[in-house]
Amino acid sequence: MLTDHYRAMARYNRWMNRRLYEHCGALGDGDRRRDLGAFFRSVHGTLNHLLLADRVWLARLSGDPALGQSLAADGTVIQVTGLDQELYGDFARLRREREKTDEEIERWVDSLTEAMLAAPLRYRSMNGTPFEHPTWWAVSHLLNHQTHHRGQVTTLLMQLGVDPGVTDLLQMLRTE
Image (tube, rainbow, N blue to C red; front, side):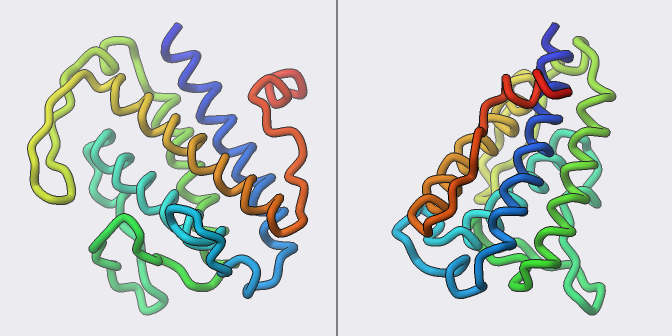
């Protein structure tokens, strides 16, 4: 059952990201970047944080460091220095990279088994602190973290006069 739940949440992640990026794409760059007092300041800052964090977690969970990499326009790897780092200043590029990562998350989640979820996950945080816990804890965090920050983006959109519409998981499940 847990694998079915995660598959639904990965689909929801992609569905919501597409919808949010559609609304965010209608904003001007100045509005997307306007500091509205959110934890990552702006719509653009929050979207960058989500992509960065998703890639960090996907690399940890999958064991494939390439899934955590972001590449600059010249093809060099962008070194992650902090959770508030801007990976992509260009919104169109950020959107393409979001789509790519959502596809990778879905593909990885589709490969999960109950045994994989129960297995221990060992990793180091960005500051080097070692952690070990069941993998399902981190998968739950990955998917919940996205929902948390997308909620912030919907609030920021409302502040900018854009109604993001229905964001409920049930809405996606009913329309599938």
